[in-house]
Every structure is written in structure tokens, then in C-alpha cells.
Length: 231
Image 1 (tube, rainbow, N blue to C red):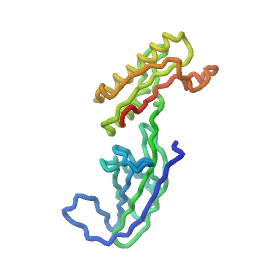
Image 2: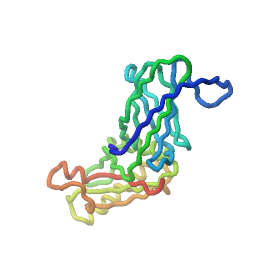
Image 3: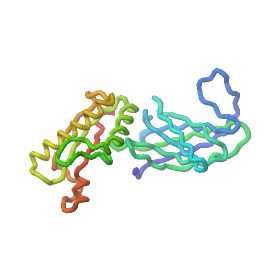
Image 4: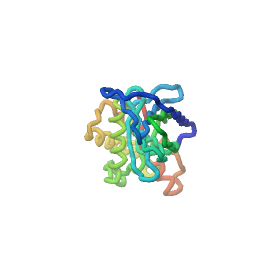
């Protein structure tokens, strides 16, 4: 999804004594500790980012959310290979593989993920009844992913942008797109997101991203987008 991304892994063998009272995670004899730092390309830590690692052999999945320093951590089995993934609102992107060697003693990985998050997202599989602003149940999964995103990113404010195809007159489509954006806002509010963080905006048929001469093109134009207004 992102053309400019960078994942750097540094393997460091540690010579240390575990402090019993330490609150920091510690590697064990059979598990390596991997610290992950997520930043943008200006090296600003990104807070509330979800990182996942999946073991190739066992398919065990671990998830973690970055803290105020843009950091999170994982304990990984020695001798295992892991897929490292990064989650946007609903899309999970593969970034790299990590091979955890078998080493004597205690050791840890330090990983840096650098990328610039996009400012506009298209919500996949958000659908409404034809000609209405009623959300179809199939939409709830994608909207719940957006709820999770907004809860992880507690300072983010968004615009919910509704768009239509060219079927019908301009004024009706503008009104319908506004009503659909309002429906999405109402759903998010019902899940605990503050209304003050949500700005619904209908654009009708003013911002096509495809031609309307095929059903596929029309479906692409009938979309709901999320625009980041404040991070």
C-alpha cells in the first residue's frame, strides 16, 4: 500500500542481569525480546499504531499498540520466523520477515518501522440500502475497525465524506451523501466516539474517482472516505 516504507532490524546480544523489580519486559532463555518503534519519515513517534507478528510455523499471532514514545514489544520464540505486519484502519500490510536465531544467553531485537500515514482512507465494504442512508449490516465490520482506530488514536479528528455516483439529480445525490455521512457518524457515536471528533460531509457526485459508464465504475464512486483533520 505504501511505496515509501522502511523496516530496520538490529540484533543485539545482551549481557545483562534481569532486575526482578523491573517493569520492563525481559527476554528469557528461549524467547527473544523485540522492541518496535514506529515513526514517520521525520522521525516523529507515532502513537496508537497497531503492529502484529505472526509465527510462520505455528501461526501464533501477537498484537501490540505503540505507546506515547511510539514503542511496543514482543517476546518471540527462538528459531522461529515471523511475518511483521502493520495495521491501518482496517487494512493489514505485510512489511518484512524476522528470523529469530537460536542464541545462548539473553538477547533482543530492535525494530524501526518508518512511514508516513495517509491522510485519506476509503472505507471498504461500507454499503447502504439503495437510495437510502440506512447502513447495511455488512458495513458493521469495517465501521468497528474505524471505531478501534479512533479509540487507539484518541486525539484524532476526522471528516466522514460521503460520495455518490451520477444516478439521479445533483441535489438529491448531495443530500443523500450528507445523510449517509451522518449515518456513519451516528454509528460511531453509538460505539462511544465523541461527536465532536466527527465531521460528516456530503459531496454528492462532485468528486468522481472513476467513470460512471460501468457498474464497477459507479460502485467505486459510491464510497465513504475518512479524512484526517487533526492528529
